[in-house]
Amino acid sequence: MLPSQFRLVINSLLLLAFVSLAYAQSEKPRKAERIAEIHAKRNEPRTAWAQDWVPPNIGWESEKTAYRVYWGQFDFFGKKTDCLIYPTIGSQSYHEETDWGIDALNVGTTSGCGGATLYVNGQAYPVRNPEGRGEIVFTKRLLESRNDRTSIELLAQSVGPKSDAYTVRFHCSALAGRRDSPIEILITGGRPDDKIELGLGLTKLPQESLLVDTESGILGTWGCQTPVIGTIGMGIVFPAHRLIRVENSPDENRVVLKVERDIPLRYNIQCDWLRGRRFDRSPTAHDWLNDLRTLAAQVKLR
Image (cartoon, rainbow, N blue to C red; front, side):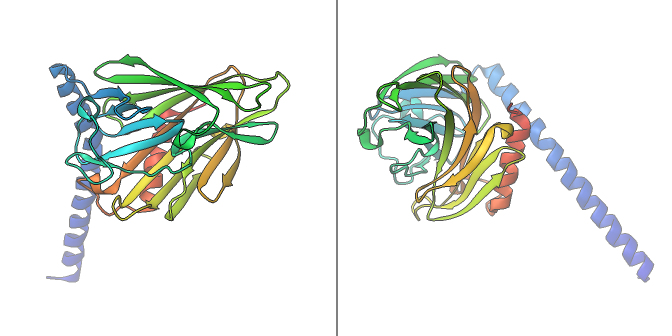
């Protein structure tokens, strides 16, 4: 074979590979849409919720990922396959790997994967009662549960200064076919002349890559907390124009945002458990950042 012929064959193969890859990438959203249409036609639930299987938990999930909150601390369950776990979760142990997945985060005393800290005149007031110890009063309830969407409410009262306390309200949702959870937070109460800011945090992992994209509005982490769980990814997507600063404490990474009293602020959390992936089993921290950038472009928070 002449050199020119060899180059022609190589170029043809490269072109074929490029076209095949482009086609596969274009087919991904179409495949997801077809799957969603099949579920819709079957009228099958793809979101669910539960509460008090172990008090004071309340959880919401899509078939992709399950989230829960207790005492103001946010947690998530990684899944091995598309399924709903809350309708039958009961009191089973999920701190070791189960048939469906695992409790993929140990929150400790932190806000977990997207919990809040309220700043009043520069003083930080975590919106949580680790292990149930604290003076914040939490209540919870279901807002709606449909086949394709489930939303819950967590209300935190007596947050901040005792003399002029605040109420912090979370509305957390699960959407069919999506791994992320949209959250709306509303802060009311306090004194009119108080300066308030909102911190959103992620538990710091012993081995992690911290990911910050201030232009896209992303705080993420990719790493390992325990060998039993293995590698996880966590992320917060927030309105980029509201960013004031990024903080790092010994046990938590946090973004601090501008927030206004009585006006809702929206953000999204997204988490992943590597062992639950069937494909792309060797992603990097950069790949996880790109996943979060894709989410940020999708939700377009303002």
